[in-house]
Picture (tube, chains in turn orange, brown):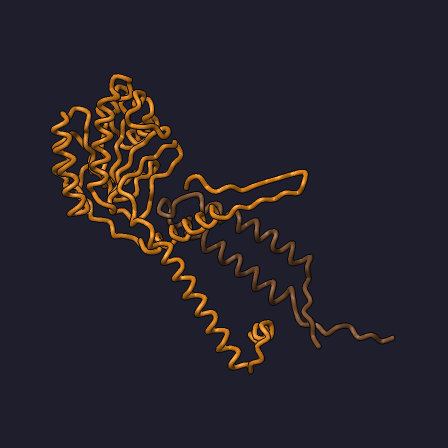
Amino acid sequence: MKKEWICSFWNMSHTSRTCAKTVWSLALRSAILFAAALSFGGAGLSAGQATAELVSPTAQIPRGTYKTWSLFLVCNPDWVAPEKSTDLANLYRRFKSFGDAIGRENLAVWFWKRPLPVSDPRLAENVDVARSAEFCGALGRAPSQGPYLVVTTAYPAVTAFPTERAIFELGGLQPADLAKLLNSLTDQLLLQGRVEAAMGAARGPTPPGGATTPPAAPPTSSLWIRLLEGARQSMIGFGCKVKLQIDTGLLSAELRACTGQ
Amino acid sequence: MSIQRWHWGKIVILWAWGGLCVAVLLTRFLSQKAEVDPVVSSLSFVGSVLILGALTIVTWLWLGGKDDPPTDRR
């Protein structure tokens, strides 16, 4: 009886039973269409990102579906001196290559202050040392021994940093040694989803429980996140395609296409 | 013959508040990638859909109905 108003509204002269069937059929079709639309939206997205360059002091580290997070922490003030820009650029290129090589299930994170090309001579000034220092403080590591590479299998919140982590001091490493270390880490992260304790211990002192062999974190529901992201992108894309213009004579307003997402 | 009658004032008030809540939730949902904080994104998206659904149901069930036209008893 409750559903009859729908049939009445659409001028469908059905009996109560056939009306209910029609209503459920319409609801089911709508649900399928909605799910299909979300799926198509999500299918166009990548499965995730391998590197995250946070260019704002308040930008959050992506939480999503990753097995590990690798943080490049530049807390050493010496490394942000102008003469260190070349070394920093080299480290950053290593970070990019490392981030790409470890696959989409592992995330490499770098902290910038603002978007700036790598070739910029003031690159060193752009490193968000303050934010890295927060992590160094949470880890109990001396900034002077940095930069550090910290690998965790749990989300690296600065207020509650995971106790299972591997910390690598990159400051004293020659370029060849740095490349060798990152290559080894890439192999382990990609194939095993974790970092061996011996590696972390071999590269520098670690706090108790610092370099351990944490079990690989179980992947969370990536499909749902991709669907959500697909819906988000679809809505943003739809919004950008719509050009709304309001002209009242005295006042004119126009919503232009989005420039970036 | 029955006609559809709506309580337009109530509908406007209800949808104004509901629209405000949905706008806030959708802004939150659209402003950040879902993978950054999936739980918050999920809650924002599902919440906005549920609010719109609830508003629709309330509008249809209680703010509109079939009423007979008033009979002229002069």
